[in-house]
Image 1 (cartoon, rainbow, N blue to C red):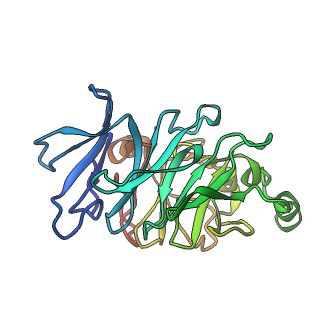
Image 2 (image 1 turned 45 degrees about the horizontal axis):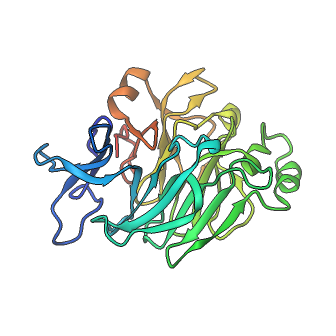
Image 3 (image 1 turned 60 degrees about the vertical axis):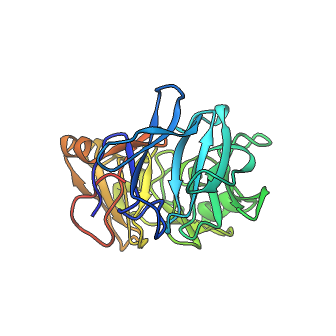
Length: 285
């Protein structure tokens, strides 16, 4: 199960940042000097600086790699991008990814990093994917030349459909081959990490839901959880959605009070992490 720890990222025994020989630990962001990522034992003991100046940590599924951001805003204010980095789970072997961005997410197998890039040639919020083995040459998958034409002709009645092409705010890996992204009041879309056409997974009024508070995908890739602005509820709700879409017109929701109980601050946003293939309330990663 996933354990709720406000403003902390639980790793180790719960499936993050561990190897067979590694002890479970909690990694969290702190303003205590030196500000950055800190680590401590799961009982709260032994807090210590882990990566000074870092924020927005995301670990690979096997716990051997992590990505994080140094500087800028992890909340994806794209005019204030930071430096994306990837490293071994113990913080060693640091490699810079691309030339700046925010909201980095590492693929389950730890081989690629997806992130929101800075403004580029007048294009806001491009989605970039970089190979850890070739970190200086990220590949832009959104927008691409035919994106707006594709969504305009394929999803003619979809609200704010062009936003997925040029105004993405957050993302995560569904599996090693696919990403889920969300633009301004644009719901959720899935597309290949290698590049290709995006397809929406929500129907009804929630096609206009806004996920700028962040989203996360369960380790098995079956469920997406987050804290979106729901159009049907006219409020922020803790929500779970099948990653396959399954024709859903709404969310499995909880009240705001429950959402605050079960969410944590991650990458500068309030977000949640769902249990694998679970219909029970998702709790914080």
